[in-house]
Length: 201
Image (cartoon, rainbow, N blue to C red; front, side, top):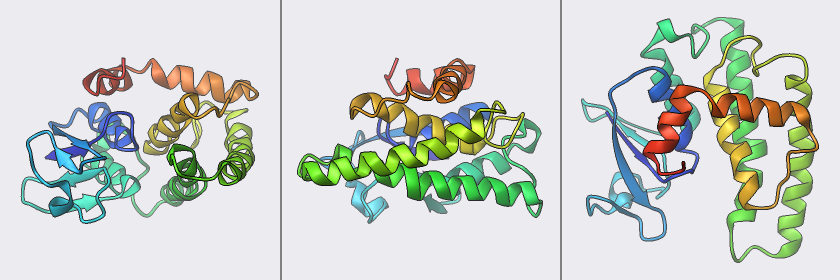
């Protein structure tokens, strides 16, 4: 399998899950400005959307969109318990969180990284983010992970988005539960491995 990534982008989430699942994976870095891979390919020929992540399987099948990729990867290593079994109510709860993180948190960060976004748009995005982060802080105030006692693919995704705050002036220190959560996840060996491989630490 090949995972196309950009350091610290949302592609870090499937990278973390591949490490957690101990799956053999080849990493291909993408320059999101030029849309070129480190091997000189035009990334838009591989993913017309032009953004990471992209997972190409050994048989040539392709998956885009982080929430789909992390579920696929976790299902390849069921013994690691990174995802509830398909068909269970817990699996739908996981998908609920993946959708919430994707549409309410991840997308709210987008204007903050856009150099041409007006300040008013950025302030609106921050206001929305504060409300959405309140929701996850409340969930994590009484349990260690989003689904309870076990780390899941949703936690990898939330961790990556929380990390973006330091670059765009979104301070999570008002929520001690989120600070503890992010610190705890950052210490996981698979997270450390993925971040080192991307040159983030």
